[in-house]
Length: 255
Image 1: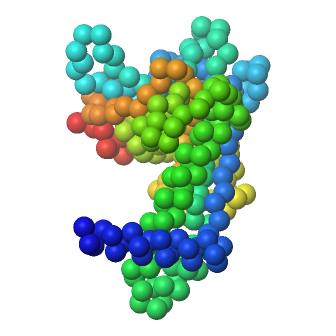
Image 2: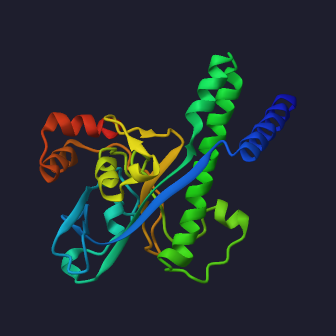
Image 3: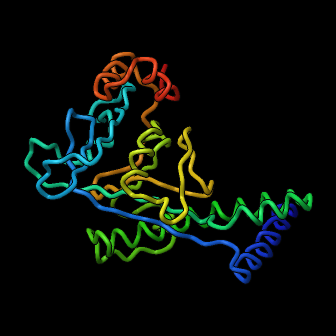
């Protein structure tokens, strides 16, 4: 409609200002690590190929909803080989932002009472971050990790996520628990490129994306959904935290 077209035209004007004025900078960090699954649902990342020193343990949650025959209750740990299998598997981590330098422009717009432009530049910075995450994932698949070097997909196929592998982000349906971000940031050190994390695990700049890379050919996105008391207690024991803390961390998926 008319309003949507007007919004689109205004976005293009703002985009030109951002590009011509070099208002924003996109930056990111990525790393790849030896990894294996332990305790069915946990993923251990190791410091080197000896796999003797644990760098990070990612406690995952398994879907518990009733499935029809032949459909499994998924967990992201299913996409990494179990440690006792002897298979040397790997995982990636990334943190990217499209909003470095945004603060001074937001402050300027708000000081001028121009809330519309403030909202617009934030929305575009969010798109930059998502676009950068998509572009980096393509480079990971074809070059940096290179597990599908011959990938040659059309734009629509990329939009439809027809590629091999997934990049789930903490806080999203497949991994609803946020606190692993603190461990990710400790390992990746995105502070060196101007990214930070708050005590409530929000990323700064707000237009940022972080997550994990899986290369398993059958990996896919899914929603954990609600979990039961049994898994809550199992997660509490695996994480070596109090029941109260576990309830806070998993509040979004508790029945």
